[in-house]
Image (tube, rainbow, N blue to C red; front, side, top):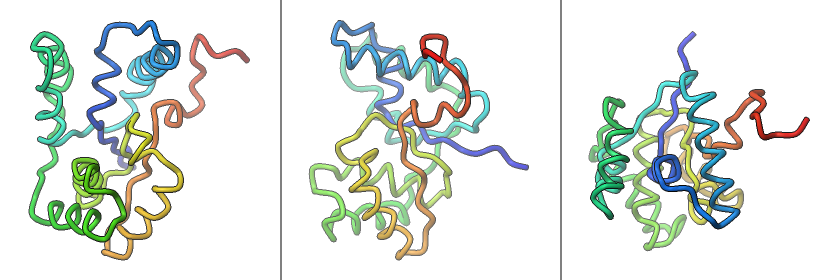
Length: 166
Protein backbone atom coordinates (compact mmCIF):
# COMPACT_ATOMS: atom_id res chain seq x y z
CA UNK A 1 0.00 0.00 0.00
CA UNK A 2 1.38 3.40 -0.99
CA UNK A 3 2.05 5.98 1.65
CA UNK A 4 -0.13 9.06 1.75
CA UNK A 5 1.27 12.28 0.34
CA UNK A 6 1.50 15.63 2.12
CA UNK A 7 2.09 18.96 0.38
CA UNK A 8 3.88 21.39 2.66
CA UNK A 9 2.48 24.87 2.09
CA UNK A 10 4.99 27.61 2.88
CA UNK A 11 3.55 28.51 6.29
CA UNK A 12 4.58 25.09 7.60
CA UNK A 13 8.23 25.65 6.76
CA UNK A 14 8.05 29.17 8.15
CA UNK A 15 6.71 27.97 11.51
CA UNK A 16 9.16 25.07 11.54
CA UNK A 17 12.28 27.16 11.01
CA UNK A 18 11.45 30.48 12.66
CA UNK A 19 12.88 31.65 15.97
CA UNK A 20 10.62 30.84 18.93
CA UNK A 21 7.90 33.43 19.26
CA UNK A 22 7.00 35.21 22.48
CA UNK A 23 3.39 35.35 21.32
CA UNK A 24 1.74 32.35 22.96
CA UNK A 25 -0.50 31.37 20.03
CA UNK A 26 2.40 31.54 17.56
CA UNK A 27 4.70 29.65 19.91
CA UNK A 28 2.08 26.89 20.20
CA UNK A 29 1.82 26.63 16.41
CA UNK A 30 5.60 26.48 16.15
CA UNK A 31 5.76 23.67 18.71
CA UNK A 32 2.94 21.73 17.06
CA UNK A 33 4.70 22.07 13.71
CA UNK A 34 7.98 20.82 15.21
CA UNK A 35 6.17 17.94 16.90
CA UNK A 36 4.54 16.93 13.60
CA UNK A 37 7.89 17.24 11.81
CA UNK A 38 9.69 15.12 14.40
CA UNK A 39 6.98 12.53 15.05
CA UNK A 40 4.94 12.11 11.86
CA UNK A 41 6.62 13.46 8.73
CA UNK A 42 8.50 10.22 8.09
CA UNK A 43 5.16 8.43 7.68
CA UNK A 44 4.24 10.48 4.59
CA UNK A 45 5.63 11.27 1.17
CA UNK A 46 6.30 15.00 1.44
CA UNK A 47 5.87 17.30 -1.55
CA UNK A 48 6.33 20.96 -2.37
CA UNK A 49 6.09 23.07 -5.51
CA UNK A 50 8.17 25.80 -7.09
CA UNK A 51 5.67 28.21 -5.54
CA UNK A 52 6.74 27.03 -2.07
CA UNK A 53 10.40 27.41 -2.98
CA UNK A 54 9.80 30.93 -4.33
CA UNK A 55 7.91 31.99 -1.21
CA UNK A 56 10.46 30.36 1.13
CA UNK A 57 13.26 32.29 -0.60
CA UNK A 58 11.71 35.66 0.28
CA UNK A 59 12.46 37.80 3.31
CA UNK A 60 15.48 37.79 5.58
CA UNK A 61 18.37 36.10 3.73
CA UNK A 62 19.47 33.95 6.69
CA UNK A 63 15.92 32.79 7.44
CA UNK A 64 15.31 32.13 3.73
CA UNK A 65 18.47 30.05 3.54
CA UNK A 66 17.33 27.95 6.51
CA UNK A 67 13.88 27.44 4.97
CA UNK A 68 15.40 26.41 1.64
CA UNK A 69 17.83 24.02 3.36
CA UNK A 70 14.88 22.37 5.10
CA UNK A 71 13.09 21.96 1.77
CA UNK A 72 16.14 20.67 -0.11
CA UNK A 73 15.63 17.27 -1.66
CA UNK A 74 11.84 17.18 -1.41
CA UNK A 75 9.95 16.29 -4.59
CA UNK A 76 8.75 19.41 -6.43
CA UNK A 77 5.32 19.23 -8.07
CA UNK A 78 5.07 21.13 -11.34
CA UNK A 79 2.98 24.24 -11.58
CA UNK A 80 1.58 23.23 -14.96
CA UNK A 81 -1.03 24.82 -17.24
CA UNK A 82 -3.73 22.59 -15.78
CA UNK A 83 -3.01 23.88 -12.25
CA UNK A 84 -2.83 27.49 -13.44
CA UNK A 85 -6.20 27.15 -15.19
CA UNK A 86 -7.81 25.60 -12.11
CA UNK A 87 -6.37 28.31 -9.84
CA UNK A 88 -7.64 31.01 -12.20
CA UNK A 89 -11.12 29.47 -12.17
CA UNK A 90 -11.10 29.30 -8.35
CA UNK A 91 -10.44 33.04 -8.20
CA UNK A 92 -12.59 34.07 -11.18
CA UNK A 93 -15.63 32.24 -9.79
CA UNK A 94 -15.12 33.86 -6.38
CA UNK A 95 -14.38 30.61 -4.54
CA UNK A 96 -11.31 32.38 -3.12
CA UNK A 97 -10.78 36.14 -3.32
CA UNK A 98 -8.27 37.73 -5.69
CA UNK A 99 -5.93 38.46 -2.76
CA UNK A 100 -5.73 34.67 -2.22
CA UNK A 101 -4.61 33.86 -5.78
CA UNK A 102 -1.38 32.25 -4.53
CA UNK A 103 -3.39 30.13 -2.09
CA UNK A 104 -5.62 29.08 -5.00
CA UNK A 105 -2.49 28.04 -6.90
CA UNK A 106 -1.23 25.92 -3.97
CA UNK A 107 -4.63 24.24 -3.85
CA UNK A 108 -4.77 23.74 -7.62
CA UNK A 109 -1.28 22.23 -7.83
CA UNK A 110 -2.13 19.72 -5.11
CA UNK A 111 -5.51 18.88 -6.66
CA UNK A 112 -4.09 18.38 -10.15
CA UNK A 113 -1.32 16.12 -8.83
CA UNK A 114 -3.66 14.09 -6.60
CA UNK A 115 -1.90 14.80 -3.31
CA UNK A 116 -3.73 13.49 -0.25
CA UNK A 117 -3.14 16.35 2.21
CA UNK A 118 -2.37 20.06 1.99
CA UNK A 119 -0.68 20.94 5.29
CA UNK A 120 -0.90 24.61 6.20
CA UNK A 121 -1.29 27.19 8.94
CA UNK A 122 -3.15 29.48 6.53
CA UNK A 123 -6.55 29.42 8.21
CA UNK A 124 -7.84 32.49 6.37
CA UNK A 125 -8.13 30.91 2.93
CA UNK A 126 -7.10 27.25 3.15
CA UNK A 127 -7.58 25.47 6.50
CA UNK A 128 -10.97 27.07 7.02
CA UNK A 129 -14.01 24.80 7.38
CA UNK A 130 -16.45 27.14 5.65
CA UNK A 131 -14.16 27.78 2.70
CA UNK A 132 -13.05 24.13 2.44
CA UNK A 133 -16.58 22.97 1.80
CA UNK A 134 -17.03 25.35 -1.14
CA UNK A 135 -13.50 24.73 -2.45
CA UNK A 136 -13.91 20.95 -2.30
CA UNK A 137 -17.17 21.05 -4.21
CA UNK A 138 -15.71 23.39 -6.83
CA UNK A 139 -12.59 21.25 -7.34
CA UNK A 140 -14.65 18.04 -7.58
CA UNK A 141 -16.98 19.66 -10.12
CA UNK A 142 -13.88 20.29 -12.26
CA UNK A 143 -12.95 16.60 -12.18
CA UNK A 144 -10.29 16.57 -9.46
CA UNK A 145 -10.23 15.06 -6.01
CA UNK A 146 -9.44 17.86 -3.55
CA UNK A 147 -6.85 17.26 -0.84
CA UNK A 148 -7.72 17.19 2.80
CA UNK A 149 -6.62 20.63 3.96
CA UNK A 150 -5.40 20.58 7.53
CA UNK A 151 -3.03 21.97 10.12
CA UNK A 152 -0.26 19.92 11.76
CA UNK A 153 -2.32 19.33 14.90
CA UNK A 154 -5.03 17.74 12.75
CA UNK A 155 -2.49 15.41 11.13
CA UNK A 156 -0.88 14.15 14.33
CA UNK A 157 -2.87 10.92 14.18
CA UNK A 158 -2.72 8.87 17.34
CA UNK A 159 0.77 10.09 18.20
CA UNK A 160 0.78 11.54 21.69
CA UNK A 161 2.94 14.65 21.90
CA UNK A 162 5.11 14.85 25.00
CA UNK A 163 3.48 18.14 26.01
CA UNK A 164 -0.07 16.86 25.57
CA UNK A 165 -1.79 15.91 28.82
CA UNK A 166 -3.55 12.55 28.92
